[in-house]
Amino acid sequence: MEQRSDGPAGLLRQLSPHLFMSLPRNDQRLKAEQYVQGLLAAEGRKTLSNIAAQLGGEPAQQSVHHFISGSSWGWKPVRRSLARYAQQLVKPQAWVVRTTLIPKSGAHAVGAGRRFLPQLGRTVNAQQALGAWLVSERAGVPVDWSLVLSGPWLDDPVRRARAHIPAGVGAATVGEYARDAVLRAPVPWETSALPVVLDAPGLHPGDLVRMRDGTDRPLVMRICRETVLSVDDAALPGCSTRQLPAWRIVESMKRFRRRAEWQDPRGGSTAGLIAAVPVRASGGGCGAGGAPALQALLLAEWAAADPGPVRFWLTEAGGTGVPPAHLLRLARLTDTVARDFTEVSERVGMPDFAGRSFQGWHRHITLASVAHLAVTASAPDRAPAARTLLQGVA
Image (cartoon, rainbow, N blue to C red; front, side, top):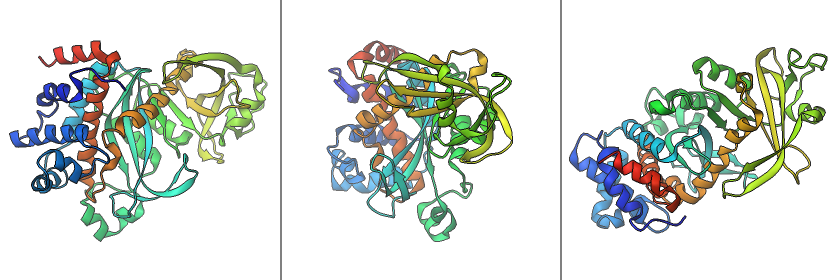
């Protein structure tokens, strides 16, 4: 991503007093800015030692470690400030809540465990995080994070104490983490009615039911192709209501296929097919049945060259009159998140925290998200939005 001449570091200097105003002490606000500057400047992996090298070398390492893992400043107010400025920059079309798997070489990094990594097609040692992003088709900025903790981290009192995991953090499903992310996201008032796109393996229709009960935002949730649904006979009289996997329903309803064209994250356009079928969803997951609990719209998408659908989505927003093509356009914002995580988040060291501290992980990823904002705002195509951002803090 090409940068403007003043660059992320210059923009950060102007925004830092406002992003970090919740930190109670002057030295903490200074260290927060220095840490983000270190993330922007350090070469290679953004370990605490590499960041400290940007701030004075070995003597600074203990100070950096304490500021991230041992200090008392709260990351939630910083995330609220970050969300406010991200909203001004991105002009978001939706919130995207998406899983990120972060491979780790050792077993001591907080939250690390054996997890399946789709891009490698195998199980690896990794952290699993859920990020809440403000996203448009042009850019996305993460503004809130959850670290998914498995049983070994929660049930072993010694391990839990070493990681300083708070007593209130307990076992939860991916769906519960996702619901919490939806309800807890630091929401500027301008974004309170934005639709939410959920892309996290392990979600099932029951999660959509529970999220719908907690928010009136439109929800679009990615599901696996084997998720069991039935055609909604109230919307499609005479159709079989037998419960079938999502892919079978789309395959059997060829008359619902439509050609579509959408913008891809690289700025080009992609032609393909979409399908939208009214369905009833049970509370079960992949391969599970159950009593119907939700009238919804099943969405499917695939490129023209693909033999069949490659992604499936479930939404209750179809009943609001929103065209299926628009709903799928929102769903495809997950591609913007995937692109920006690779091109921006990884570049500023978001996945690089290797410490054992739960609080340290949250502080690091919060400050890395600030670095992500600075890089995104410094791109040439974001110049008008960045000027508005700076006018707002003048």
